[in-house]
Length: 264
Image (cartoon, rainbow, N blue to C red; front, side, top):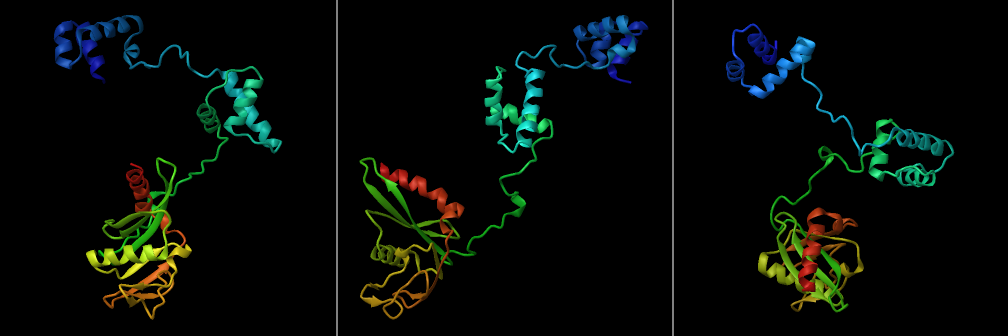
């Protein structure tokens, strides 16, 4: 038995006053008085909790519009026509009916079971996190196209440690060349140590022939994305190309902040 019923019965049987019953059962005197009025009008059943739903909902979608949305979806689909929320909203306007937002149309269709959920994002449980196990195990390189405030086109070249996400080198050029790649790479290697491997995309700028500090790279033919490159210190750098390096999250999240700094 609920405490509301017990409190009312205690008062009705004159075992407790209204004030004492309200204090003992932790309810306000005003609410207990309302419960007593309900009890006098409808007995114990009237003491059950009542719905708090408003009596009217001025913003509620009219039933006629709901029915028309469902009918349009069925009719357009049967005719092989587009039956999305935008198209349905257009037909509602043509019919002279109130036009709800596309999200409201979509909710009506969901409620009617006319939309099969098709999640556009993979569940987190399916993600496979990829990152190097230690610093200098893999460096990523890419460059970002950016337009400066005066309209000048620039390319921002970045070298990023895959494990720590530390920005090893960042330089802006009018156009990135193979010599620029070599210069920034060797400067970063001299400062931070040499990587075991590099990861780039398949643009031609990563495949070039050059020398570094007067020393040949791998028989004077350095092709970072396609061969084993040798650093000036003699260490071998394993490099390979991938066509999706730019899509790696920590690379893309870095591009815009760096571009904003260059713009300033």
